[in-house]
Every structure is written in C-alpha cells, then in structure tokens.
Length: 239
Image 1 (tube, rainbow, N blue to C red):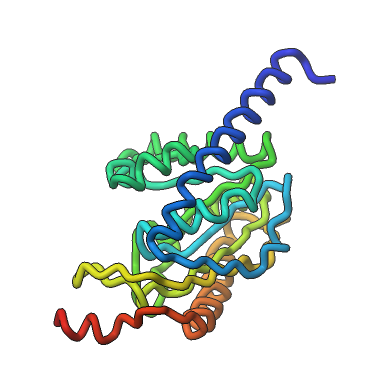
Image 2: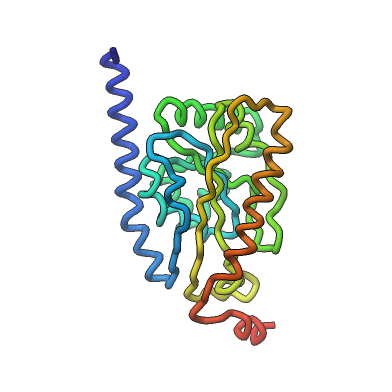
C-alpha cells in the first residue's frame, strides 16, 4: 500500500509531466510558422508507461522542435542536454519549460550525479529519457561516434534503448550561409533494443549496433524527403 508521502510524490510527478505536456502545445506552433513538416514513422514502437532510454541523432537546435512535436506521443518523457544549451535562446528556455535536465559536462562529478538522478526518476516513474548520444551537433554524412552516457544508463538500469532518427536537414538548412527554408523531416522510431542481461562489457557492441541501425535509416529517409524550396541553388548563390 502506498504511503501518503509516496502518493504525494506521485501526484507531484504527474503534475510536472502534465505541465510539460501543456507547455509543448504553444511551442508546436513554431513548426508551421517556420514551415517545418514533421512526418513520424514507427510511432507504434513508443510504448506508453514503459521506461526507456531514447537516443536520437543531433543536427541542430531544430532537433528540439521535433522533440516538441513528438512530446505528446510519449506521454511521459524528459530529456538530458548539455548545460550550454540553456543559454541558446529561445531553445534553451523552451527546453527548460519542457523539463529538460541540463548537465555540466565540465564537472564530471556533477554530471554523473545528474545522470544517476535522471535514471532513478525514469525507473521510478516509468518515464522515457531522451539523450543525444553524439554529444554535439553534426550535419555531416556520418553521425559522430556515440558517447557512452546513454548506453551506460540503459545497461545500468536494464532499460531498453529506443532509437530515433531525424532525416538530414541539409535540404533546407545551411548555417554558414544563414539559410533556413521551409523543410520536410522524416522522424523514424526504431523498434526498442533490449539491454536485459547486458553488462558494461557489452556496451561497445551495443553502441555500434545502435549507431549502425540509425545510420542505415538516416541514409534511406534523407533520400526520401521532399523540400518545397530546394537549397542547392541558394547555397550556390552564397558561395
């Protein structure tokens, strides 16, 4: 039987999650205003009330608008991001409003404590935790090597990994030329990957397996997207 304190903690958690969901709705208006069309594949792999570590490729701050678009599909989800993102307006404050947990990577002890606290929260409340395993943004043909943090959490907590892949933004976004056109993005939710029975020794193979699956989907979906304003000619004019 739950104690009064446990019920209070559950009520607070539910209230926070409800506030997060409410906060995402006005933020979703940014997508049509910016001309971004999100097409989600594999939503059936998002199982409500099952904790998981979500890993997604990281291309730009636009990733967060995709997260905002998908937030209601997850029902209960939080995210981890580097502390520097908080100061990248307007995305930092909106990420904070949506419950993102910021970690200071320059302070390993604090970062580890924050990650462990997030893992405890995820397991206790059956929440999903969104992490960008590349650690920094990249719009190259290949995803950057994955860092261990997300996979350590998954193995430590014996939680499934739910890979999510954004198709390339290069058809509508170019940072050096300061071009941001309307764009079409395919977001693919892959089947969850179990970590049951795995140990730290299994992490390198696990990381490579997840990255390989994500790269295959990234290449395929990036060739399928259609952008209303092709970027190639615009980039040529600025080069």
